[in-house]
Length: 167
Image (cartoon, rainbow, N blue to C red; front, side, top):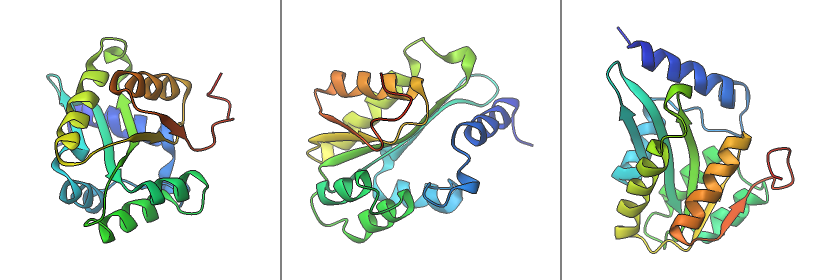
C-alpha cells in the first residue's frame, strides 16, 4: 500500500503538471523512470522523510542542439528524452531540470536545492555541463531554477521565458 506522502506527491504532480492531459510533457511512469536511470543514475532523486517521499527531482543531461530544439518548441519533453538516449554517445553538455516537486511542509528548508545540487554534481562528474535549462510551471519553479543556475555558475535558459512565472 502506498504511503501517505507518496499519494500526496502523486497529487502534487497532477496538480502542477497535468502531464496526463498534455502530450508535450513527460508522463512519468516506470518506463520513463527506467529510461532516465539508464541515461545516468543521478537523473532521478528523492528525499524520504518518515512516511515516504517528500521531494522528487528529475533532471537529465542532453546535447546543446537538442536543448535549443526543445527551447524553440520544435520537440516535446518526450522527444527530448528519446533523442537524448538515441544520441547518448554524443556530448551531453546541457542539463534539463525536468521537475522538482516538494511537499509544502518541506519547502524553504534547503532540502530540495541540496538534493538537486547533489544530483548535478554526480552528473557533472561524467559530463561537462555548460548550460542549465527548464520549462517552468510555477513561480516557485522559476525562483528555484535561477537559484540552482547561480549556485552552479551556469547560464539558465527557459522555455517560454516570457510567461507569467518570470518577473
